[in-house]
Image (cartoon, rainbow over all chains, first blue to last red; front, top):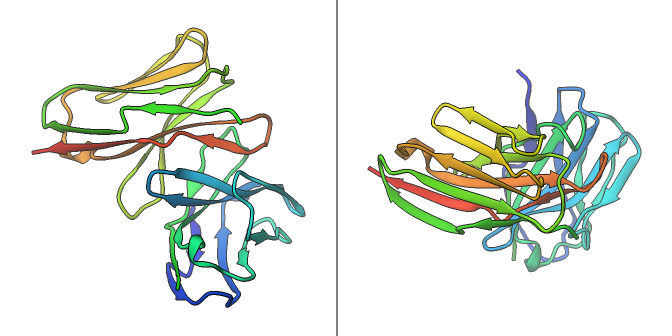
Length: 112
Length: 111
């Protein structure tokens, strides 16, 4: 089944404790993105990647890191999480930014 | 940053009513996509519009792309509770570049 998977789905952590949210797709997509979704602010792109080893900042990259060492995986890293990073996070993939975006199920992160 | 404005922000209607939601920008789009997001899930693509003046139909949903490719509308005929969700529009800022999303229209269709 073609899909985007994210783990974990839910995470409660404390300020400053490094965490990684994994994202994997099995559709051989080149373009992958991370978003955060907050009430009143909509979907905001954090980082995107056009292909392996190519990543770029989206609208809200501060406090986040990503890597794209393999085509299928695009982990999101929070080196020192803070409460303002409490949000619903989505990973998405597509053949290109012009094509249909396939979204993962979301990761609800709470930083205390 | 190219912004997408969606209106209305919230809409609550009764089953069977018709409605239209809008997605507007001051910039010209090469293409525009509409997505629907249900609570607790990621957005799912409804349609992509590419040509100015284009009209696409998906059952009771009609999508229109403005002639100048700066705006788009989504019209739902005889809305049903299953249409409830957040309707989002987006476009990309250029070839394989970052994506711009509107804030969405939150639609509630009451039985």
